[in-house]
Image (cartoon, rainbow, N blue to C red):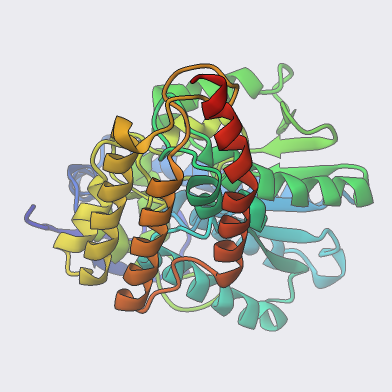
Length: 405
């Protein structure tokens, strides 16, 4: 797709001190924004400016509430969670230092099979943020969560024989995304009694997202709503009314409080389109592994074709090509009956786990791939756990098969 220049210029009504930013962005939506900013509909520019001012005011007021509940910001590294982090830091920095007492945790989850390109970007962004904390004078801490080794993607697939995830058996989201972050949140609630979870979700993302937001909104119109799965956790969604275009306008006409620009984030969206979002409940899971292009796990087989991975390769990220091929290999083996046990884990006849032969084959191929690409795809600890699992299952598998002889 040919990329057209998209020039977005700061509106003086938004913030007189925002620098002008010029970037090239792919997609019809952003070109529409450029046209609209050149000749915006009557009242639209004023409405957008008022909405951004209201969000900043709202964040400030909530931070200054007379309680000490810590804030937990879910951060995926995509545009929405980045804007949320940006606006929160701006709001807190505009509060006098003596009143910046509420702790803020930036929580990012690494599934251990994230897209290497995007994960490298997120890692560098968070490292830069951590380096800037002293200068920002904000009580903020970056927290990185990940699945326990026994629940990692490779231990489940190659060790326990789970077939590659699909739409009817999406075992990965809970184990690799929800549980790691939930453990941290429970720790905070156990220590502080309550916590406020800030999420960069928006109504205009999709009809399902809008419905999910509506179901959890406070009936009295308050800022906070109780989390459906975590007692003592309140959900706060400051940017839920912004459109996709407004998110980009705000980012492109500002600079990160931690320094630098958003140019690399824009380039990643050019190359791979959207991100796989921060997930906290199974209700959020369908947005991960949809048919739309997304950043996320390079092993994702929930989608028939990983458009984001293909787009990144087409954009010049050649190091992803062998990973894409192995992702397709995982999907093909999992869908081949010859590589599946004829007995399910519950002892009933049917398509069951991957056979030990299939697991050994895929592990050998994965280790070769890791050596060839010089990328950390699987840890030595995971390999040990996988082989231990094989030894434990040998007797169980034999007994199962004898029972159906």
